[in-house]
Length: 159
Image (cartoon, rainbow, N blue to C red; front, side, top):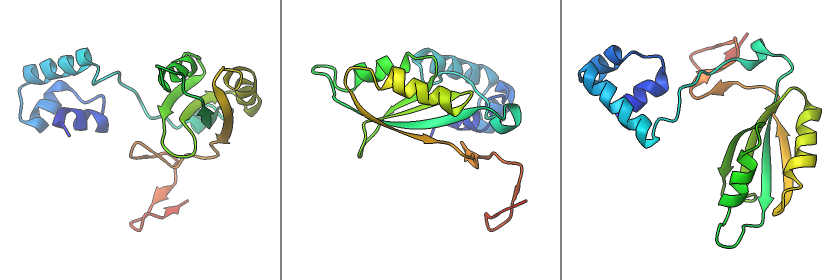
């Protein structure tokens, strides 16, 4: 993996100066490479990993498996684009296996997500079925431990 990308994945707030030192480059080279990555769409944005439970106790996240009938000449792309245009939707991914699309979204409560699935997602032409899975607790995301418990040297969580 490209060094600059790896460093930014670990810490998106890392300065060009620190990246340059770690990568054996000049700050100007780092800035030029990052600008190139952004222009090409390799870097799409910068984000944080938050502990959502601490920010909003009412936030609910769901993973939805969606079976669809691909459209002629477009395959899965047209349905994926339709689904990703909903503001509620965080992620849409084409999957292998027993379902076609994986959709991730967040809402303020279970009913809000259920209504989205029932009234908006499942009514899209080409959607055959959905299966909704609610996130009960997150332990780790993008390499970071989420909850405030500590992890011992065996990898076990202890309060």
